[in-house]
Image (cartoon, rainbow, N blue to C red; front, side, top):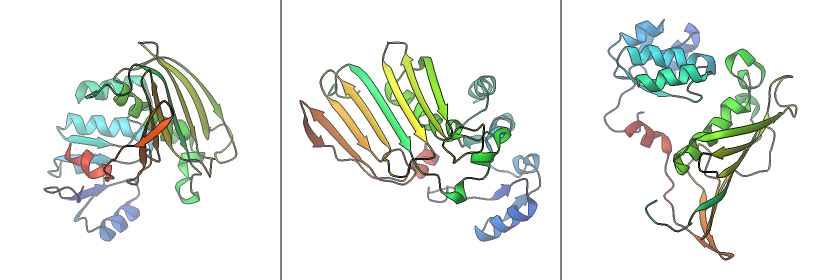
Length: 244
């Protein structure tokens, strides 16, 4: 937020008062609030919601009803009904041709200090589906311009998450136009890269290491087996999201 000109962080609120105060001191935030209502009445123009998954929708809905702009972490909601309520409130060049297949892979070894509720608290929305699958689904929806109409998913537990909580998901989805999409996510893959592949009737596009938070990645266009790198700008996506 601070990296975007014209914005200022003025208040923070959370469920643990001591932690909120410590965070405010460490980040030079002038005001701490004991409740969401207090935050929304503190004269803020926008809120960033980054608490546990089950709180995203109620906090966002409250902020939207208060007339605030909302930037929320995924998943936007735990249920379709909540997501729909939030929504209600709130190819320049034909290089690839017609798409015939799409594949996305987001495999990481989740660091110990990032596990916690993400791997052991089902009621908070734990698991790789809410943490990573939603990223890939949103990215593909943006790129393809159409939604999935048929979905089959298989989950697995490879020891990173607690029993009964998935740390791996493999999904096959189909769009209204009939395009088949393969998506794989995991908290338990240490040596993989994040990848996105678009295969068309004229060419294929390969994107490596482009799904992570850090700026970076490589984009290539493949025509008849000959690969050509496509220059891309490596940019921190967070300031751009704030600006948008």
